[in-house]
Length: 294
Image (cartoon, rainbow, N blue to C red; front, side, top):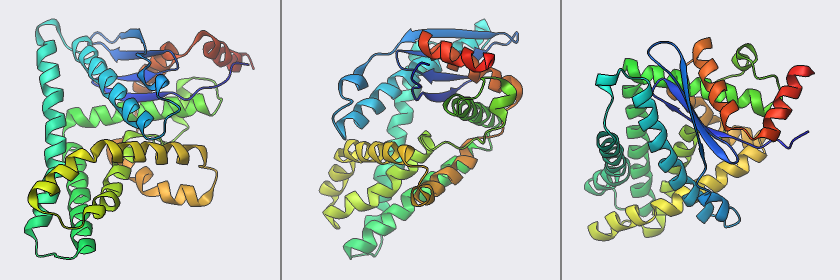
């Protein structure tokens, strides 16, 4: 039997991207009802840094962002009518703008708001800043969750989690089996982002209540460090979910996924399973087929 490997994924417009051991694949539901699939080799950046703590998290995040941009571009084209397909420049510009807005809204804005407050003590200042950051994050998720198109992406997000859970729990990869699992998953990006938000409170506390220049500089410079720490914590938690105290610590992030996932339809789970199968190696596919025989 082939050794099982963890897979990661991402919901895209009308589809799902899955990253396997050697390849990544995107499956998208076309307007005519068919499923269009693209399979590509993984860049391998993260493999070269896989033994270096902290750095491997930053490199993995950079690789994931790169693959995510490509997957979103493919999905936007495959799920749209010919005259509605966005150009590559439009997609790249939109993603860059989203990253700038993320840093500005969730990293720099809370720092400026906290500095404008009356808190002088280091603990109170950083706790207040962290509370603002988490409140903005929750408010943003709740707000975009009301948009019909985003709700549909959240359904595919749920389908991605169910498909991965079916694979990692060793069951036959059918729509019915995948639907038995919940939409929660410890390695979800939502859990990662919440972990980042919490870690900012601890890491930024090192600087106390700095002046404006150091305040903004520290918030920006420490982003890779915090991302690396969050990656290591999520990685450690994923290996220890059998421990009650780990499950308790991860519970807030799992609960938050109820805002970023929705129960998917069978058609959406079918797309997620198609992407998953396309991302597996030949050995992994053979193991999956053996489940069917069993």
